[in-house]
Image (cartoon, rainbow over all chains, first blue to last red; front, side, top):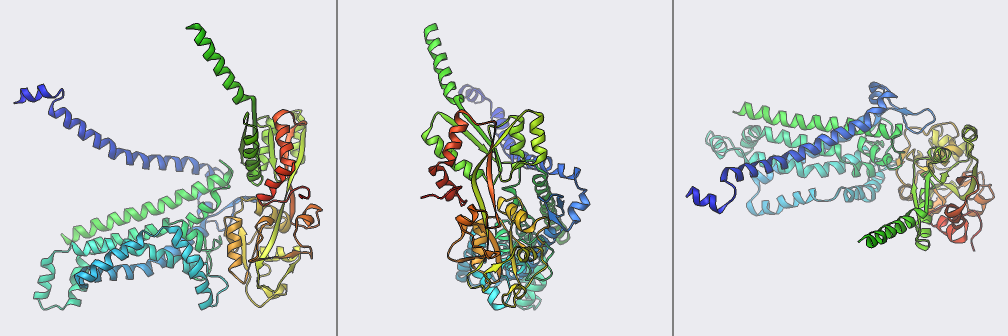
Length: 302
Length: 271
């Protein structure tokens, strides 16, 4: 048998398996390589700015005049802008996303669920530029009229648009988490005399907490990295906003608005790449946090 | 065999010849970049033997390149500075300026805004944040929404040079990344003020007069409209060959039509 196999094929079975295994290994290493090169490139292009300004002046400086005769590179207003927009959007998106996940997973009848679930997921497929356009043309004039504001392009508008974009992420990952809660837990809860509300709030949600917190963090990291929407609807003022109706300029908007015309390898160019490094570190931290939370709660539930 | 080989070499040499025959390298101002690019494309269409490469990088870099001899034509949104002339003299380079277009930037508001004229001093006060309410410049009692451009754009450069002088735009000013975006924002907001290149004026916007002077191609040409500047191309000595033919094309009516199409002001009246 073995002999006949070896006659048919020039390679032995172990060789073929070895070959396949390593092909897959190389393919998976490829994405790691890409990540590595992105890091490398970003740091190579961004680090030179720190020969001109100190890291603390760059991060905590409140003035951004990159092309002035005496250029000043301070990205603190942009960091604050990103933080505020992300925080506010998660305040809006988390309850909506979580509640729709609970509804779809625990309460909705099968046919309603079949309609609602794909519709929420459809929201995720709206391109961000369309979302930005919507915010600019529809939401901005509306906010301006309703609140009698001088300007509709502000922190609140951007947060609202980002919230809409984060809802599908939060909702569908939370829903998976809730679905993964074993049926026996719910049955035990009902058997102990708990009603549906008590079962959902005291048993199902705590049991799915690891997935839900991952969902929230991933939703937030989507909001913080989103570029087109904040470029179009946040207004773009490089000042720390004093109210939610003030304009702001989140980090990605700053990079996108200025990169096109910054002279190659000038201080301005390096400063924009350094802004990219800061942004990457923030999103990286968010993803680590998501991993940590999902690990932690999984351990505790076991 | 050897005959074929010779023919092949000749062919290669000929084709190399046509590639390198007319090679014009243009670099410098990002403001002039769209003009240079459009003109180069059109010029190469009618002169397929000439290859023109156009790049940006800033007026200063362009002038540096012409002094170093690394380009044939340097584009610049300003005249040469004394320091650059000294540098050129040391390297025995005589830079010849060619005025190729005018860049005219107009302050704009929403068409319902009652304010129709501002002085340079008022514009400066608005953009530095000293004046924040329309009523201080003769308008309604509303906060002014100040719209500015990304600081690396040529439009911002003109504005900063002619209006702000040495001062900086205050940080609360909104930033938009293009002339089109500024026009769209201002057209949709009654309290906004912005500035755009003259080519971007449209019926939804109200172009303000500055110091009582309306912005037109004529007032930009005779220098009476204060927010305009000249755009240049510099050559090392009087241009010859393809560089001369290209510059001639650019100042011809066809070239100046392209200038107008890109949103700038031609250097003479087009029929």
